[in-house]
Length: 626
Image 1 (cartoon, rainbow, N blue to C red):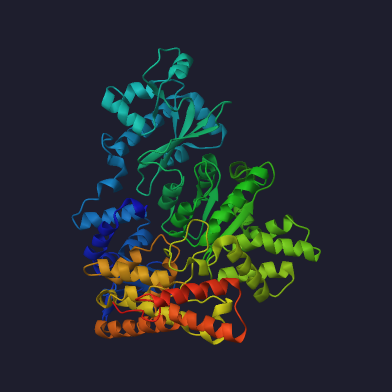
Image 2: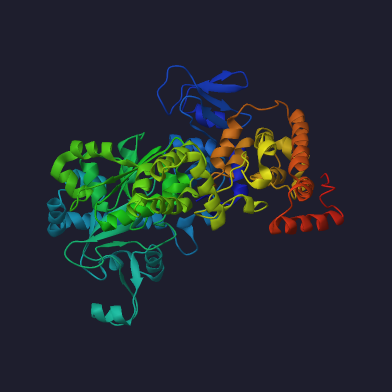
């Protein structure tokens, strides 16, 4: 979502917003030195552990770990999406969202939100007037209050009833087409309707209608379920300026209305499953919209809760959907998050099972839901015969690309230990094999030096503040190096204005260290801002895998308090990084190894390139300053 708003606009919004004022309007803040404190609004406590920094424009709770910028606070406290939070802050600042961010107001589109609202009410009225549609929902166990809560409706068995109601002239028909409510007619569909070619016809016909709403309750699109036999069983709105099925979750608005906080959210497969579970009191059920759970879905979910349960039918299709969900969830499986998989008995889906056994028995099944780590290992184990060495080796090989997608941390380590028990080898040894397999498969962190820090979907991001256990970086050389890089990044985050003054980005050219690209990009970002703040820098990384680690460094105690001292410390840190990790140091290491043990083919080629580089002006022997 962030990509639809120009970055300079987000920078300006963060710069204009006073986080103390925004949070203070919702939480009773008390000044404490240079910061403000309060009892955390995100968990119950008696002693204040929630702190707000006006200098960094950042908040953090030392009790539950909640933290973020003013944008993040509105998202967490008000349960808003990113775009809605930015829009709220823009209105406070007297700014208008850029045109490209206003999906509802594209040229010629008019106010599509208003049109979708009127269409939803029209479908609701049709349901009230059509006994057959009401009887169908009653037969499925959906009562009147639930139908009203979800604004369920009915599209009549007609080719043009909605078109005639809302498409009186060409401009209105154009809006209906843009909203995905009608389809442009061709010769074949015209003959099916018994009419002349040309014109348009209604997209949804003889279907129960499920409005899909955003965090504000605005209708973005519809899902339509056929009442009798017919294909497709479910029909969704197409992609429109409002509706993108890879981003939206059915039932999330209703779940937010039912409760202010979530212990968990549960992803099920169908509209009817969500409606039936909510009616039974399981109001944390949501569903994707006929597509696999995407990382954008997961990011939206984890902004609301730290526990996610995938609930699937126990048939083959359910198992396939579960595995796709696992693969997409791996890059987001990190410390503090719980991902579980719950499978239902054969022949049941959530709709039928909760009707058969009741909400209490259904929720009791959550106790047996498999953690992601256990599900992953069991599924891999089911693909091989692990009773012999060959089978266990194959098990490790199958696991390698999956572990390469998981971020470093306790969660990954514990999952690895679980796999190690199946492979029957020490976890440390298995880690070496998995990391080596990952590198040979094209996800080597060392191969990414100098690239953009953001990783492509599905690849393991480079972790800054850590070093690689490669042959060139063993023993004494690896000790403390990650700390030095983390210190430099921390200085930039704590004192971005000082980093802007240093301007030492070019001195790091040629430095080979995992995560150096992150420091380079932070220096570039600070340099292009007139008055950079910690919050402004962090907002640029919100949707990237490095965001979690950057916030950790921003929350760590500052090395120095004053900007002038920070500038000097940063200069010294950069100088040491060049000395320890620059091309000159690598060349010295290779020359020494050539004398002692000899070089392999790749190392000889690397040394040749470094020697040629040294011969040129500005080579590794003279890293330069500014």
